[in-house]
Length: 420
Image (cartoon, rainbow, N blue to C red; front, side, top):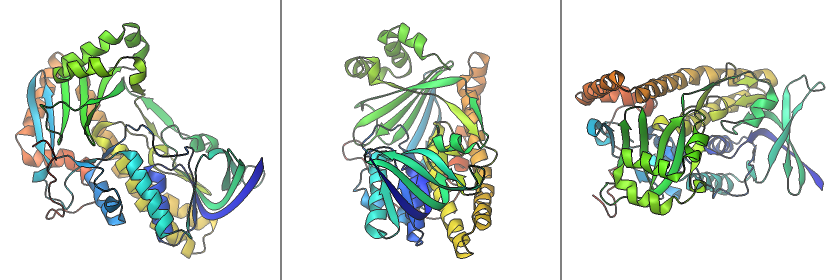
């Protein structure tokens, strides 16, 4: 086994949307960056494929959309059906923003496009090291001083990356956050989500997000490029063992209740529990996102829930917010104090928006859990919003349009290839 040493101005741990977007934005500004990514490839199964309109706008400005060769799907509508009746419909085509449409974008395609953008257009500043698992933070003064880089394990041996700034972009279960000792609070919610993927039913159009609710049970039905639907339904926190003990018929019955259109396909496609996955739903509160030599971004700094696809959205916005601040700090001398100030400015500029999204998500979580008289109240609230385009824009705008200014559409609505 050999030991390799690299030196860069910034070391990013984690090659997801946050890490790779940040690396591309830094390299574009002539900041040298090394990305350490644990996987050897991007061809993995992801749940986080929903990209909000603001992030679509940012990815377009970055030049990423043109590299995807159409491997994404605009969403034009959202529909909530409660107890068998539609209670809220939103048409994104009526939202007057340059990029009004959320899109469904397979993360392998997005990550490959970001990596190729960095490697092809900024090869002198962008280095991606795959199959590299961070094992230790480098610290000055026998472990008590600023972070000065990271060591990682690879199949070829240990790698050491020395950097003025290390970025933890390694997700909701961030190992770098744990190694740093930065305090955080994990707040579990009352539910977990079971995910599975099925063939898209012919009676649905594939440009609509569907939310189905019955009592305190709900499901998310998300069209997925090119011809599938991702299904997520709630179970009580820690309830997977009990559901499995009841056997697959219990899963089938849940889908029968929420989406009878999928009754046949769930029985033919889901033949064992290995055909499903479970997402532990929690949010993480991190009071301080940085310390000398280190900053957290994306889910490592602020874990969110799956509602309205805000995880990827805030990851990308974090990246494009932090990059120019790092460049300015380097131009000011690149010292520990300047970089720490940049990271603190980054947190101040982002935490209000993250807090608003978290608040919206938690309110929706509470609404989804209502039943009985509470369910009547939920349906009444949704119907009030449904009757007012201004209310729809206020509710959804807080999640989807934090960066864009109102204006004419810059993109046309993409029509489905086979369904209208």
